[in-house]
Length: 366
Image (cartoon, rainbow, N blue to C red; front, top):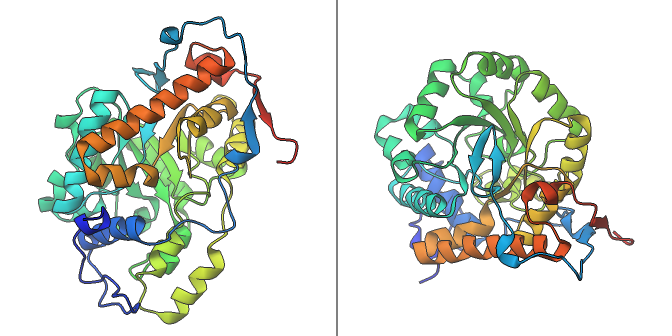
């Protein structure tokens, strides 16, 4: 049985001819999203993360024992065992709750930070809270609760955001910006007006730090500066090059016009590499997560060397997370080994040395 077949279809699943049934509720939508990310071609076309434009200059004499190379660092003022994050992906149903549990247990064993999917479903329906309640399984790692920023324009206030944090047992909240997804999503919320002031108020009043992320189209330097100035504790650029949510929602939308229009945005977005460079130049001291299309530990090393404090992985881990705990453990271990090997290969023993390296070069034809 394939990974995709392990996730039950929802009443909204398109059949093989492309027809759709009525719009899903929030929990059902999460199952649908996972299935589509595993089964369909939902990557952006004609756009990349930009990381392929960079390469490390090899050091033939690193003057290190490989066992001396370390991944421990700090994030948001606390010690962490790796600079690696499992980006917000899912939750809101029994099936996706089981994925969250597997992610939490494995992240705890390996020392990765963990983001959960949008907790909106659990705030609205208390019976779904257990699908996001991962702190009991991951007592020591940073956990990021997640909500759509646009919900601040649709009745979600500070108390609701606080509840999302409590449900996940989270150390911080990340608000996701997903304007294009909302346009092509059948259930989309389209009022993004005045959000910066609402984000500013939430940053001021919430009991935990508030960060902001994109969902795959990238946060540029100018936008990041406005968010930092509003009080955002961190930015996750979540650039183009990985999952395109216009393409995901294309498979779900019953409106043939919107489904066809989504195709025009398959190459939309700011590359992950460009976003990191821009944001770091605009805000040299802001806490920054680099995600969007990362596939391995070499990509993680590149985003850290470009200026990120953490490297986030999303859909590239999802298949392993659905398959088994053993598969997910092996996948995370592989990423760590690749990152350690890059550091050894350029002659640095600590993450701070990687972040300060001069051995990351833009390719001549890049």
